[in-house]
Length: 324
Image (cartoon, rainbow, N blue to C red; front, top):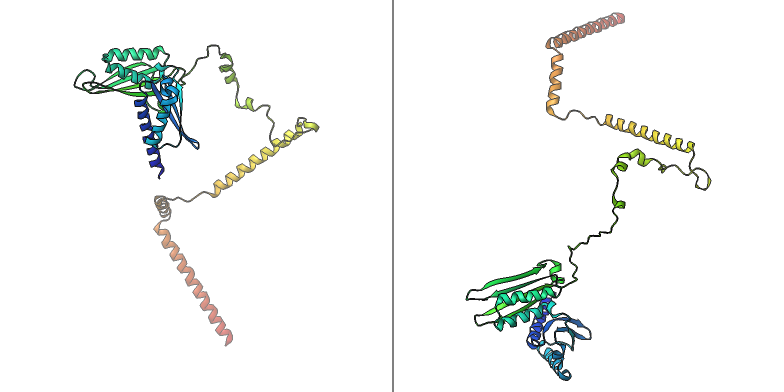
């Protein structure tokens, strides 16, 4: 079986067991349950306003409930632990059932709602909310809310801190849903904070004058260079010679770094990348050299060439005469 289907079946089974207990233990003041599957069987913790009615005379009623759980829900060796509710007015399920019974007996919904929420707050609750939905006074359904104190509606606190209970009142005009939410006393909410009036804040205040007087150089004063080893025996402070040598080494390193950076900057000079810059440079060269200069250069070259040819002819004629 897939994990998703297993979770769905467990949730469905839990809801069915909860409805079963509401029907069987309505007179005993059913206040909720908790189911835990263990290797030894199924452990069920029942909360009830009257544990004696749940157990019955000689344990007759609890044995009957255990047998029905095995037959109807196929539970392996169910073990039921009944616990008494310390404060029924702070149990949302018990309050919802009480309010539903009051509406069925003919109480006006406003009186029942205000009386119930006042009892909840008098019991020490941090906040409570009652929602009645359905045909409260006429043929048209509506929703009535009663709020006191502080209540959480969403997020992790709404699931872990808020106690939630539901009930149903069957009336002549129709059913009325009863929804009750209670934040018990002593609950730690994530947005709670405390003010310590006896706290001494003088140690936490920093004087602005002290901050203004401190500079970077002053903060660095008294710090020993990391490269300077302790001078003298047994960890004595280094002498002046060691400090001067460290300063000279640092100065030489800075000079070398500057020289390398300057060489890199000189070698990385790149020619103009844009075509416009190249065209401008060619135009400037053409303006400096005029066309007449080119003609004079060509005439000089021709004269030199003619002179060389004449010399070569004279040398050849002299060699021929010498051979004869």
